[in-house]
Image 1 (tube, one colour):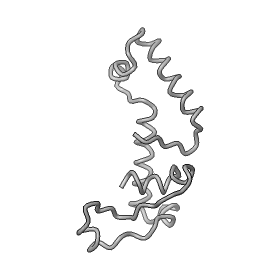
Image 2 (image 1 turned 135 degrees about the vertical axis):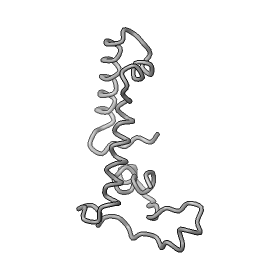
Image 3 (image 1 turned 120 degrees about the horizontal axis):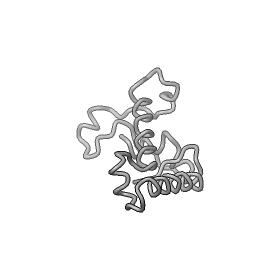
Image 4 (image 1 turned 180 degrees about the vertical axis):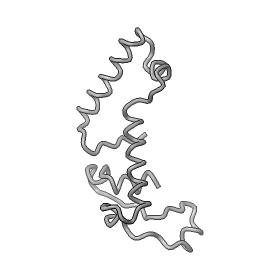
Length: 113
């Protein structure tokens, strides 16, 4: 799963994951991390953040009154997308730097539609 980090550094993300792992280890007395997640009926922080990012991006796409909607590129023509194997509403964006690739709109266009 690609990692999406809009406001947290890699070090901060790792620290939060380690904190969750340690808390579950204390609560469930040395049970494997995956089993502890299943017992507690929660997902790991990376999966939750990924899901929240997906939901946020889909809200931007659906709501034309959203303040970020104007950043989206022009939608593809419906007649063209009907004939393509990858029928994405919006074109994918090629980015040169990792920072641009991981930005909200570019990452969402390339992974969430």
